[in-house]
Length: 127
Image (tube, rainbow, N blue to C red; front, side):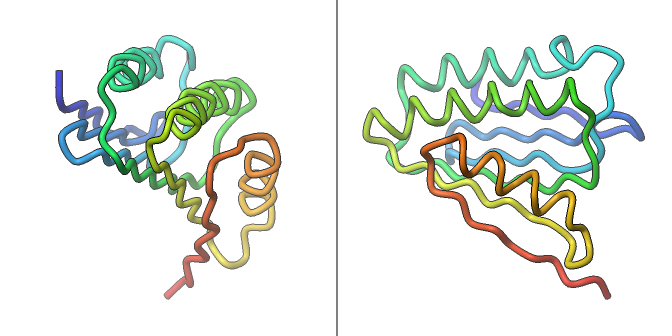
C-alpha cells in the first residue's frame, strides 16, 4: 500500500499519507470514539514504510483540537518517525497552529521536547 486516505469527519482528522512522496498530513479535529482503532491504519503503514523509507519524510500536522487518547496515538506516530529519523532518513514535522491558539502551540512544544525529530512551528494567521 503506497497511499492512505482517510477523509475527515467532525470527530476525526483527515489523514493523507503518500509513501511514494514521503508526505504525511494530519488535519482537523481528533476526538474519535476509539483513537487506537482510528490511527491503526496509519501506524501500520508507517511500520511498513520504516522498512523502506525515502531519504526525506515531511509531516504536516494541522489539528484544531485533539483529546487525550488522540495525543497518545500522535505520540506513537511521532515515535515511529523518530526511529526513521535516527536511521538516517531526514524527517521534518511541521506543527501548524493558529496565532491565538496557545494550547495547540504548547502541545507542539511538548511533543518537540519529547521527540528527537526536527520540529518546525508554523503559525497560521487567521484571515
